[in-house]
Amino acid sequence: MEYKHNVYVLASIVVLLCISWGTSYWQNKSRYVATNIDITNTHLTSSFEGLSMDQIYDLITPSFYSGNVSLIAKIIAQFSASKAHDVIEHSIEKEKILSYEQIILLICAVAQKYESEKDREKLFSLFSTHSYLYETQPLLYVIAKSEYMSLLSEIVAWTAKELPDNTYAYDAYVYAIKENNVELFKSLLAQQVLIVKNQADTLLETVIMKDNDAQFVNLLVQELNADPNYSSDNKKTVLMYAAELGHALIVSALLSVGADKDIMLDVKVGTALQIAIRNAKTKIELLLRESGARE
Image 1 (cartoon, one colour):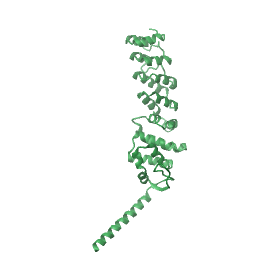
Image 2: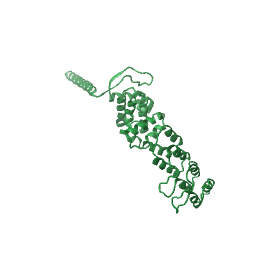
Image 3: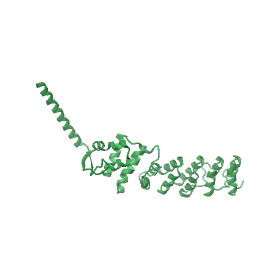
Image 4: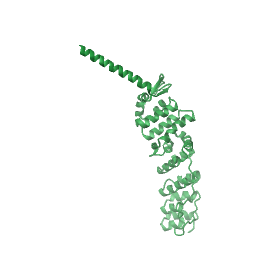
């Protein structure tokens, strides 16, 4: 009996020590306060005061596993922007539950719920500290094809201010052309995502070489000021390359936006018409002759 009594006493002491340690542990951890946390996604529950990061995650982890970005954003956005930033950063660095694309969309979804520009920029700062999130797909491309496209122009302005040497805009257009996605390209334009002229010239050459949708030619020249007579090697213009490759729709598009059909940069190369004849591109030859091109 005395042995059992000693065991009970010892067990009680262990329990009390654990409780004491646990209480001290939670008291010493940094606190994150939300006025109301809507865990059920149906109605606001009573306040949860003084939650630690670990406690917050105990509450919202099931929603992360669901992959429901809107639900997760609704929960996180009930904290201050600074704390919401920390919660998302914790999920990026520790939990690794969501895909990179989902995290980008989560940042946008949470930012969209704050009225203050300063609060939204606090969330946007996660894009600069975790640039690997958009190594596979460009940041602006991911946002442009999502339901958070309305944030695009604001994010572009933020990147120009905070990350002046970034290529976010150019990368987004590159990816749109790579995917041959004209509508997304137009969406980027509609949101005032702009690039400099030499970048537009490079993209125009890419469109010609890959025989992308001819609509890109009009958009690049008319909206982004690409040069329809651009030459990267000072031997052939983009029209000459299109003629050589037999890209009839591209040739027509270039002619419609003012490409010089008679220009010659190198006598050994000749004009676009001479190139078409030399390479037996009969359809291209006809198009150029109809436009008034001379041999």
